[in-house]
Length: 115
Image 1 (cartoon, rainbow, N blue to C red):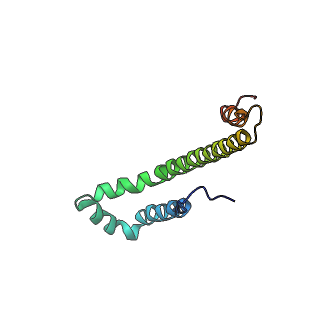
Image 2: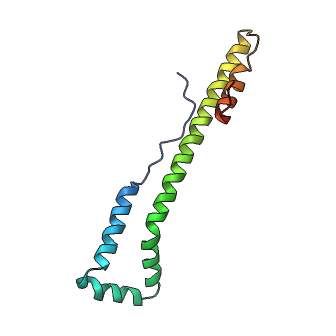
């Protein structure tokens, strides 16, 4: 086995936990006992910005999930192309008639074409 990458795994924040904390804070702010605290918070400088951030968190979590899915797909395509290039180089070394077949096949697969 040949190691093709030296990058460390990316630590990913648990987005469901973030959503849960955000929902808790929104529910807390809606409680009668919290109203004085919320009123005081909104009157301090940048207090309304904090409220805006709370409202934006779920949408940001959705966007992050979409970006993670796209990145996963891109990484898979990259790894498959790397494997195809290695197969092409090995086929060339072994004298196969059409060593570029592996790259053409992978590119066709990534475009959704029938090879």
